[in-house]
Structure formats: structure tokens, C-alpha cells
Amino acid sequence: MQKVGMIGLGLMGSAFASQLAKSGYQLLAWNRHQPSNTELLNAAGITLVNRVQDVFAADVVLSMLADDASHEELFIKSGLLDEIPEGKVHVVMATISPDFAQNFAQQHTQRGLHYVAAPVLGNSKLAQAGKVHVLASGEIEALNKAEPILRALGSSFRNLGTEPKQANTAKLAVNLLLNNAVQALAESFTLTEQAGIAKEQFAELITHTMFSAPAYKTYADAMSQEHFQPAAFALDMGAKDINLALKLADEHGLELPLSNQVSQCLDSAIQAGLGKYDLSALLLAQQHKSS
Image (cartoon, rainbow, N blue to C red; front, side):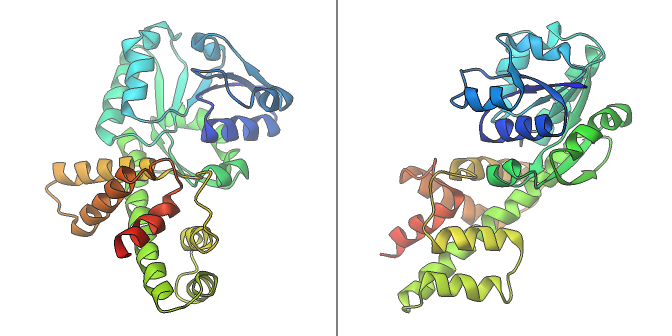
């Protein structure tokens, strides 16, 4: 039975660990704080270790942390990167900035370590069901080692190239589309509700005619059912991702006027106290602006 390490046991990390355990991998997992679902993780056959260094008893270690700063703090400032045995493969599944990913990968290479970027498309509910889409990039040998593990996590796997930034850029571009689409949904629901059209009726209309894609179905259903908590994908995470995408666009001299407007909508929603709500809560923010 192959050992796999997992760093970060939030909603996504716990779901990934559980999927891998179901697929027959032996999981060594670590979280900064004691997970609230410890009993469930143990029941799934996941071994929780006390020291983060212990997960590197596995040759391939996945990490799912929040952002650039979280990786900087845990791996670099703490000196952890210097303690990892040479030859290990570190698969970073978080949505981080492409520039940070490239620099982080270089720091791994300098220490004889291998780096794979593997963000996913899909929220925590899809992760629990093993239906995320994995976007991966990195050196060929490391990708080959990580691919069977990553395929066990979701319904598809895509190799986007040898540069870590490629997978992260693709993920940011997709989340750019997602944020824009959810804001458009919020505006459409607000408009039709003012005309006396029931949210359930409008959700059925759009998802069975012009907008039948999974993202529209997911967020139209959430809005029509007013299911804003618990968050499958938190609104403040959406804001983080769109701002990373806008920063990347600015670095390339590109203007993204629509996305700039949506970023402002997300910021307003966060200021209204909706940051930890699901991204679908953009509807609440839009209704508040329209009242």
C-alpha cells in the first residue's frame, strides 16, 4: 500500500484525504490545528501525525493551504523546506499566484525536491464526491509520480505543461469566469424577482435552456433555495482568486473591465459581512444594493 502525505485538513484537504483512503492509499495527514472531524478521519483509515515533518515519510505529499502567505509561513519562514528529504514530490493543490508558484518551485529544486502544481476545479461538495477536475503542471518525472494519485481525486486530470505557473494561471482564469458568472446570476435573479417571478421558476428556466453548464446549475440552485451556508466555496476565497487574476492581468498590461467591477461587488459583499458565506451569497449583496 503506497503512502501519501496530506498537509491541510480543511474542507478540501479532508475530502482529498478521504478519497485517497477509499482508493487504497495509506494516508499520513497533518493540520495546523486539531481537525474537528478527527473521528471521521481516523475511521476512514487516515493517520494524523503530530509533526508536519512526519508526512514526508511518504514519497508524494499533497498540500491544500489557503494562499501564498500560508505556504510562505509554513514551508519557508519555519525552515520546513530545508528539513524535507531530497527526492520527495510536493504537490501544491491550492489556488496561489503564478509568480509565487514559480518561485516556490525553484526553491524546491534548489533543495533537491520536486514540485507539482495541481489546483482543482470544483468546490468542497464535488471534492467529497470525487468529482473535481485536476489541473496539473510541473516537471515530467514528478508529474508521472503524482498523476495516479491525482486521478484518484476527481473525474478528470489535465496536464497543462512543465511550468508550475501554467496550472495556476488556468485555475485563476476559470475562477475569473466563475466569479463573473455568479455575479451575473445574482443580478438576473434580483431583476426577475422584482417582476414577481419565483426564484425556483427562474432557476429551472435558465438551467434547462441557455445556461445548462454545471456552474450555472450549482449556483442557480443555491440562490433559488437560499442556501448560502455552510459555504462550499467561500465568497472571500472568490475575492482572493479574482484579485490574483487581476494582478496577473495588470502584470501583462491587460485590462479586464468586467472583472474589475465584479471584484468591487465581492469587496462590498465582504464589507457587508458575507465573506464566509458561499459565493452564491452575492445574491444577498445584490438584493441589498437594489432595495
